[in-house]
Amino acid sequence: MAEAQSNLTPQPPSLRGKGESDDEPAARHSSPAPPSLLGKGAGGLGVLSTFRASDGYPFYYRRFAPPGVPAARLVFVHGIRSHGGWYEKSCRAFAAAGFEVYFLDRRGSGLNTARRGDAPTFRRLIDDVAEFVTHLREERAWLPVVVGGISWGGKLAVGLTYRHPGLIDGLVLLCPGLVPKVAPPLAGRVRIAVALVFRPWKFFPVPLNEPELFTASPDGRAFVAAEPHGLRLATARFLFASFSIDVYLRRAVRGVTVPTLLVLAEHDRIIDNAQTREVVARFGTPATVVEYPGAHHTLEFEPPGHPWVGDVTTWIETHVVGKCV
Image (cartoon, rainbow, N blue to C red; front, top):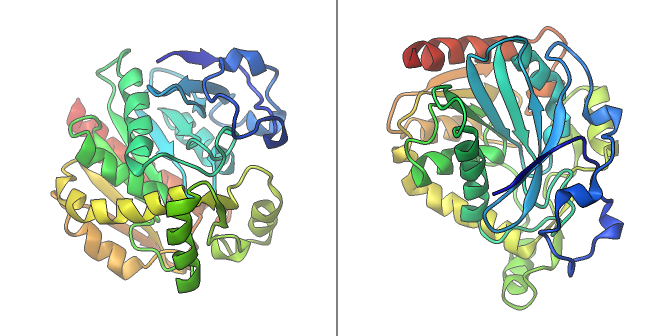
């Protein structure tokens, strides 16, 4: 697995078709990254790079370095609609708090234009995260690794602990999509099932295309509506993978034995908080649960001064870093 670290800008989707190879060297498309992707802030300058998975697919990730020696590594995976560009503010804050932060763009999502909206299987998506973490551990293996699963990415984070036990030291679930309220209508599910047999690459709308589902913030809603890299369409194969991982997680939850923090938002319109608590209560180890009154699904869009980043930082320092020393 080769890694290319440079400031990269992917080709727009119109320049890469389905038939093109997914394993072209990333360096062939290198150019300065746009300022909006690499903004300066409390955590310094984020670096945009690519990582090549074992099947040859190169996916983008952002790295935010701390000002000194890191206390731990945080690896974030995003939701079905979002990508790493939504979360740069919190990544810089976590880096400023002393963590080495990585935010992965899921294959087919965010800046990854090859096979847009598609994934072979949910296991391949879990393995992408596992291979990235394994690569990180080749250097400074003593550093604790915490995986943060945001929204739909929470499924991958929980599945990771079951499919690759012992790989990570802690788990942070931010409004995880373990029990969603939102799903395609019955007629849409029938069409997806038919397409899965005859046209698995047929696209369907992602059932999260209303900005108001994510936040009450007018600026946040405007951002979600206008930003160009969010996933709005997904293949029948990807949507089947999303259903399949739900079945997989029914047995995977008891395999979660690492320290876990579950963070919920009172006014979440995407996930069912009560049922999510019940699922997490079946983990193999008790989890810390925090629910923020008045908050909405995407905590990144909460007003300035919201305590969620500080609370996650304190929990990691206490329950992961403190126990690994």
